[in-house]
Amino acid sequence: MARSAFVCSLVLFCTQCNSFGQGAPDSQKSGVLDAEYRKLDELVTFLRARNARQFAITSPKGIDEAGYVKLGDIEQWVTIRGQDRGNPILLFLHGGPGDVTSSWTFAVFAPWEKHFTMVQWDQRGAGRTLRKTGPKIAPTITVDRIVQDGIELAEYLRKRLGQNKVVLLGHSFGSIIGMRMARARPDLFAAYVGTAQAADSRRNYQAAYEALLKKARSTGDAQALEELTGVGPPPYKSSAGYQVQRKWSNAFEGADQFLYGTIGLRLVAPGYSAQDFKEAEEGQSLSAEQLVPQTRLMGPQDLGLEFTIPVYFIQGAEDFTTPTEPARQYLNSIKAPKKEFVSIDGAGHFAVFMKSDQFLKELLSRVGRPAFKP
View 1 (cartoon, rainbow, N blue to C red):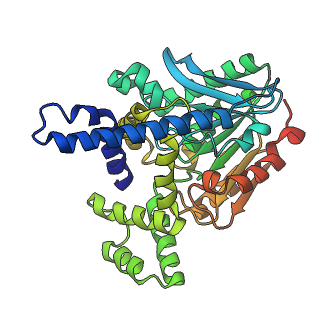
View 2 (cartoon, rainbow, N blue to C red):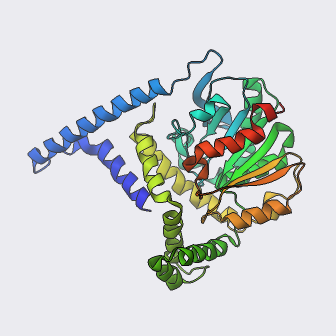
View 3 (tube, rainbow, N blue to C red):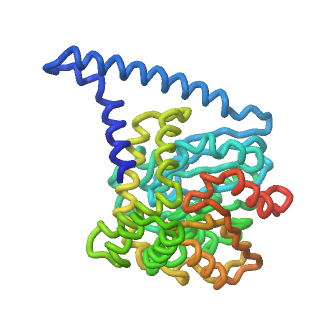
């Protein structure tokens, strides 16, 4: 909530600052604001241009494409970046729902682009896809429809890049989409990798609450213990209890600083602007409204228990949002030709971003080019 409020304030400042001087009672104050805005705009413009040069794909075998692809009868935003088209295709499925990552991961995923052709996709109702369609598509924002969109994208990528298989990497809500894609069309995919893996929405908050209490006791955090015991275990009658859980999940994972850091990355991302902040927030709100009720009761049976492709979970050891232990138990219940649970110490819900170098190392040993079977 705090990040959303900050983003809204930033967008308001960046998009409306030039109008403050019109009819304002204090023209001198408005002039100062305009001057400060111009300084900020010049700095951001400079940083975007610098980042565009620094993170440019210059390899003769490379690819750097960003644009709209027709999926499910609507235009959806897709980015494709990599140093070598012959590398495995890695389709990253963002979380949220609606929390697009294509606008700020240019630096985080740059090392990955040496080993994979990285594909990011603003899902139906999110980010730049929402910009193109507007909110009128809300009735079509369903889990089943997004899964089918993802399958169509995988088919497009195989044709566009001349490969037979795609590696799926699903984060948080994206892990729901990814597992259902893998189950529906295993012929399209070399492997499924889940992180911040959804396991059982029906017991997620209870498991997270118990893990948070254990963490608070082991670290001797009296404030956390007081607030968590104060709201008691879920389910809660109001949002207050869930807000306390989220507060301490983010605090114990170190996610607060990371989430605010993504705001800065979005601000200086090549090709992006303040409009993308606005669309990102609107997309999260619209997607949550449509999709959270659909996923609230999802359990292992809904995600899938039998797969014909390798399944890997690379999980933060202390994920208090999609708790680590239920994810481990879920993987134990799955039948797959190969499966493995990998735990990253010192990481939580955002391990794929906050420990990206270690995550990449684990990923390469399982689905990198030497292990990849196109």
